[in-house]
Length: 84
Image (cartoon, rainbow, N blue to C red; front, side, top):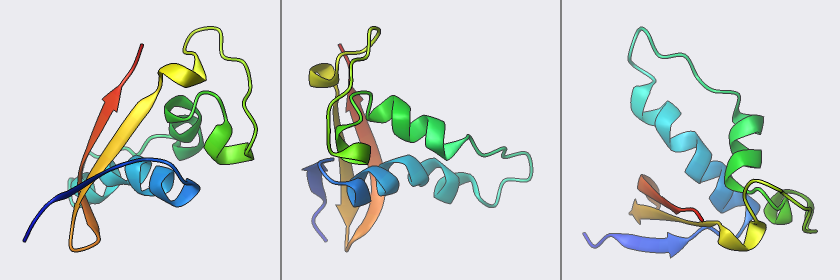
C-alpha cells in the first residue's frame, strides 16, 4: 500500500487537510475541536481556495503557503505545512 503525497490545491483538499486532527482525536475524551473556519483561513491565508481570488494577508503572504496531505487508499493519514 503506497502512500500518496499531494499538494493541497482544491477546496476539497483543504477540508481534508483541516479535518485530519479531528479524525485522529475523535475518541479522546478531552478533545476540543478548533473552529474549522478559522483553520481554513489560516491554512489558506490568501483565500484562493475558499473564494477563488487572492486577498492580502500582512502576516502570511498567500504565495508563501504550501501544504500537502499524505493519503493511503483515499484516506488522509498525515499533513505537512511549509510557511514563510
